[in-house]
Amino acid sequence: MKGAVVCDLDGVVYRGKTSMPHAKEALRALAADGRSLLFVTNNSAREPADVRQKLAEVVGYEADESQIITSALVAATLIEAGPVLVMGEIGVESAVLAAGFRLTDDPLQAATVVAGLDRGITYDRVARASTAVRSGARLIVTNRDPTFPVEGGLLPGAGACAAAVETAAGVTGVTAGKPSEGMRCLIESRLPDGPIWMVGDRPDTDIALASGPRWRSVLVLTGVTSDPATADPAPDFVAADLGEAAELILRLSKVG
Image 1 (tube, rainbow, N blue to C red):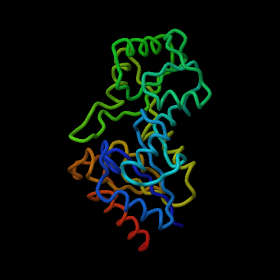
Image 2: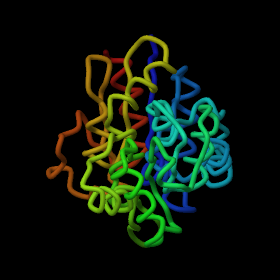
Image 3: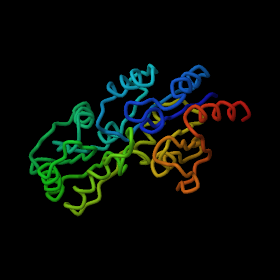
Image 4: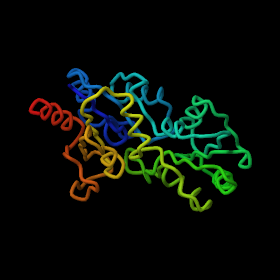
């Protein structure tokens, strides 16, 4: 059984608007070998359609929207009641609406708050979200990534945004993104039986997600991790980039 490959995006397939070395060739080789491919990102800002378009434009790889899982989609599966107050971007809002819940800006009406990457964050947005949580709303955090990689460095991520709400509200939210059980379950539900290879650049999210008998992990060094010796948890394998990771997966699968 060929099994599947789950790829993180930022720092693995692309970095900002730049494709990672050998990314297109690696993805095509894995697909040609009959692997099921999923692209899984903790970035909650983008809708799957936008991620698909970016893969096509930046990397030159044509994916289907069903192959893309964002932390916003997982967060929407965790909502138990609405209305929902979102401190995030269009990816979260669309996922919440698609799940059948109404949005609100009123902190006293909100039954749930979803906090994610919010590049328009303001004091008022943090105040409304934290007020809703202190008033009894359940807090869901799309992901805990403190940063995300772009050309030239790192920018604050959803974890940094959500930390302001949690600090002000005195509450720790439920995590939706990698390495949560909710993310793992959604991934496994979209894949056939067989082994799952996780390829990522961040040990505490990507490598930690690869837990269970079906999973094996490959840490690539094109993102936030430059010294694999410091990786915690430790990956099963280390590769310079996605191209080398694909070669490793294909070679080991033939041997095994």
